[in-house]
Length: 102
Image (cartoon, rainbow, N blue to C red):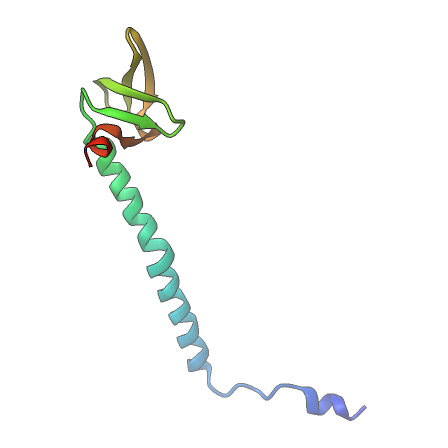
């Protein structure tokens, strides 16, 4: 019965140390999770804004095609002679013509 008193943790006397640890966790979380995601979103937005007629692209679904028309939020791809499909700009994953040359 008297052993339960000995097993209790000692009270923490330094609250500043706990706050510093939470701050350090937040800083690590920011630099390894939030910041790279923001950079990735910025790069994707820049890529979507730089699409132009004639670029060969690949969609996120794997569809290959050449851009025939670019609107504000959509692009029209020619996937075969005379076959045109309209996609959202966010559905374009990469420019294939740049990938082929490198």
